[in-house]
Length: 265
Length: 256
Image 1 (cartoon, rainbow over the protein chains, first blue to last red):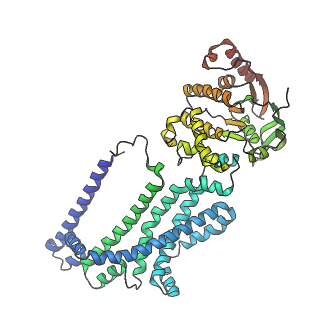
Image 2 (image 1 turned 90 degrees about the horizontal axis):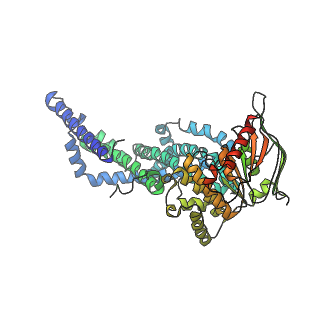
């Protein structure tokens, strides 16, 4: 086990390393190989950073459009996933009927599905939300179901012995037990929902970070392109950490390790 | 003598196995248990002692035979929530503090909030965990966790305390301490206790009667009355009478 402090040092070393390598590669491309396209292929990281700070307002606005739709879709998809998992855990028949279709649903490429959905609803926001939800529900349903199914028999026997009804069993045991599984699914799904939402942007949206990426790519404004890509990456990372933060809040017993008290001070 | 509180008549339990040879977990078991009695079901693994307990608790249905508890079926007794069960592992809910673990059965029962708090405090006192109410299970030692399990079982003030090898995962010192604690709790609450164990000294120390079961097929091979004076504490383990009982029961196994 490495300590928190060591982890931080490792992270910082990595970041510095990547920055140095990036700048070095850009320098090589431009001044050693004398590639005339150097600035397009791999611009200096510091110029990308400057572009980001010059354009932060429009980038964040575009990001917010995409991110908020992703978030709504994520919430919807997560709800559907949870409901499906509960239904499948309640009835073996239901599981047998639904599960193959769940798998099939994941074989349809989102790239193909998104234009179809857009053609039907003719609304960019609805499409974005739908696709984000579509991406989200599967990992949530599968993880939640595996949580519901792994509750130990003893724990169920205990409630059976005091003749608790089905509702109470889910309320007192099945749901709280499956929470950590649910969060595993949410952690997988969150960055995927953001990616999906960006993807839908690119299908001809008027706004959103995906539009920024696409247009800057066409118009050869490399710095904006990279700045947009970084913004997208941040959005994915942020979505992941929001879920982690929510997990900490909801499952305090998960992160509390014996003897941890006092260390924080 | 009063009519027995629990009457077990010709109970058999057969688990069908795919290859055709069924496993006979219990074969024609007959047993009467008196009200307020502390009784141990003792035997090696595979003798069906846990199965018998689970049948009394209505967690399993016997293949044949019947169990009558105060003239009612185990199912009726379960629906009236008269059983407190302690399992081999503490079976605590990790996401609940000690207090809320003890509280859980009362939530199912719909006990009023005020009453719950008072009852939890009383239970924490009983199992001597006053200062640990707000801890999570993982913060407790194995022995403390099992005491929470006992407190939770007693929280509903059940009429029957059914214990399935509750101390088997604990070390010898903790086990003997908890044996003593259990007797003092029992003397305060006067429940009928059915205690499953594979530990001979433990069964002698705790019980009014030790029911010895033997395997293949599971059946009662002896019932030994333990006439040691009560209240008992751990010093009784050093007396010749105690030793005699242990020896007697051990020999009853050799005879099988």
